[in-house]
Length: 318
Image (cartoon, rainbow, N blue to C red; front, side, top):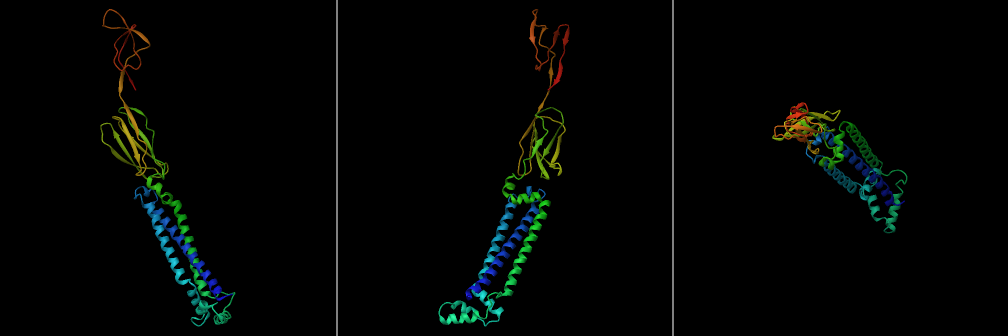
């Protein structure tokens, strides 16, 4: 085995350990940063914090990964070159300084260089590690990286059940930005029409939120916003208006997503007459009788005699 091959064997071990340590440390920091972002954004705080915060978590992760990649590259460039490894072997084997480096540079360039290389090869073991201390140090760095990665993954797994919505916001930053991370809020139980003066009760369904904002406007009034606390178990918040004075418009929002607009139209109490099919109505319009059909949808008062009975105004609610 040549001197170059012996040095390359030690160099390969060092490079593998350094790359493994860098990758594992990057995994550990990524897991910790993602878990920290989930804790920061969890419990629906991502709805009130700036929209770009979930995306900024990944920007920080990217900066950290670039910094670690640059650090690992620098370590490989400075400490894992052939000359650097040869110097470490010289030190650990107790060789004269420069003996192995000189042979490594001159090997294969003449008879004298080959003779010197044979002399150095005779003092080096081809089976045992030539730089055991260097190997132990690099292996320890890889082990520290593995332990760090395991700890980071454990932190992330612990944060998942506690801050699940925050973790979803971190993993899906674009959906968190646009409000598509959760289903849109809904207004339930609102009728299309309601008698004027009645009370109205609706439910706002918005699971995954802590608060929602209900915009309300009745005919003739200005818009107002009510803040509703969502029950974390049912995902529902009740809302009531005591007296309906006009058409009512409702829109609910969580700060990102907005529900469909709901309109409840009011109806007045109206007057209706009593009529069935075609009746003979006698009035004071002349001597001739007139025939009229008074339907159920008449909205004016009808007076007159129907047979032997007198029809009086009556009320029928719509």
